[in-house]
Image 1 (tube, rainbow, N blue to C red):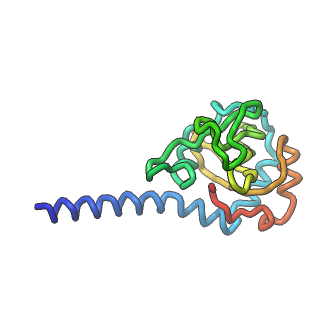
Image 2: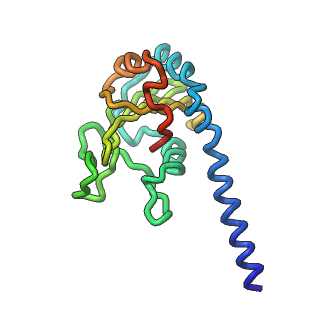
Length: 178
């Protein structure tokens, strides 16, 4: 009986892990191979963005997608929601943690148009860096995603356009959601 229960638990855990990795493999492949880089550039250059800069405007589906696959947000294997601070709020900019309640990410730019979201943010900790995240949304669900990493500040849509005019390989697109 114990063997049967152990076997069920083992296969159940393996199935959950497999589903978890399968759900992100598609995005990871597209990001790593920069397959949707041109989608992102075209979308940003042609979009009519409204600057929001309010973390409550980030779609829950995007937060869940990022949280699901960012091991830095896991404590003892338990996934915590990725948290952002607004541009005018404090965040953990270094790897020294004075206040564990502070998020490790601070929004630089959050802009949205009818079908796209553009998010640039600082990611604190050891190796402080900045992320560019672009996604297409359909019914508030992520349908296309591109992520890049840079050390440049991006506080406007024009900053992002200028930075993405370079070779995508220089944007470290191989750093998926970390």
